[in-house]
Length: 207
Picture 1: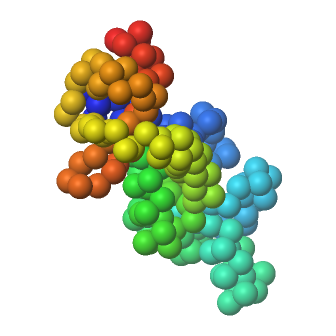
Picture 2: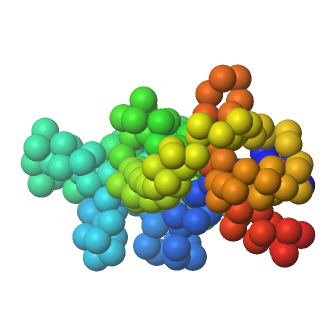
């Protein structure tokens, strides 16, 4: 195993963020449903959005509580009888379960999306909120930041770094020879992560 492969195992993905199995009555609404049905499901399940599916169960849109509030403010109570298709955002940005929290968070920020459906092989696994993704990313970066803080006094030592293509055994030996517990991983003059002796030990046991 190489250091680059080990780093991937430390990355939080959307599969980690999705904690509950998908329930069609909770996370979806059919495209021909009325807006009032979407509002009921959102309210009953304390969620912010529903994936809109067609007859085949494929995701073709997303409707959020914000969409519902907007259409009611524009058309009054009659808006609740409108079809979901007229209110939803069609062809929403979707993610895959193995997408990293970092990549997904950037996508949500740039696209100004608060909710993103997660799909695998055409099947909806769930809908993630930007807050949940941000929490996962914060947890990940906090762990790395703490490791870096502990590492600073040791960075004076020669060879105090490693690279994605380094074999974990070689890096482990380097740590032992330098008396270090962790090393920054550098790629193209940029630190892309931190690997610890515990990470390598777990990888060796698991491998």
